[in-house]
Image (cartoon, rainbow, N blue to C red):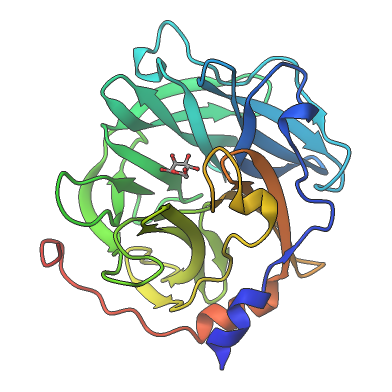
Length: 324
Ligand code: BMA
């Protein structure tokens, strides 16, 4: 019966949406798909703000309790820059991971180039200044996050290239220096047919280290006659070998249900990029874009999420190249 509990794990915050375009210091169309971090006793969201041209930039908001009284920075942390033609159409969908070795936060984000979306990497120590490392994956590629530490001396990144034909799976790559990436392999496959995660999947928030393995949330974009439905499920990766998927939930754990998730610039979208864990309180707070228009939050008991994913079905790996 473990699968039946999945859709009750995350409870939406009653004050949702926690941020809308009206909360911003500048005129904007939408605010959504934030990365999240806990920094010096505050929750930091790196928000995707889409302006009235359709171009997105990344803005910092801070809150003590992570739910209310957000304070916005006036200027964006990352906005399309003339020196970076790969960002000409915007900076989107950041994921934030603290790298203790670098004493800095890694920001992986979608840079929207005129040759399609690609993955770019930037570093910050304080969410006030940022250093771009530039593109790390060519187009089309999205939904990337680093792991916070090296494995066998190498950094590891999850990302989602869009193939010219076939299904859009999640991939894994390795780097000695955060710049040169190789040993590419499929990590988690999109399912086929009627499944909620058929056709196209992608990483949600960065994987979270737990004693049982890396907790991973991912979205599935199930296509329907009225467009895709974006829902999220869970998987568990081996702690020392993150390319090994141990478990994968059959059912989604969150699906669009509230009006602000079902109706927006893009209907029926739940798109989480960030979460904040308070281990002492056993609380996991998930931040997500809803309907590509506003920001929602949902909380879960961390121990229940772990129990659930540990009981999810074992994952059957296939070799790269075996799949469509
Ligand atoms: C994905 C990304 C997200 C967006 C989602 C739903 O491909 O572009 O930014 O939230 O589609 O529209």
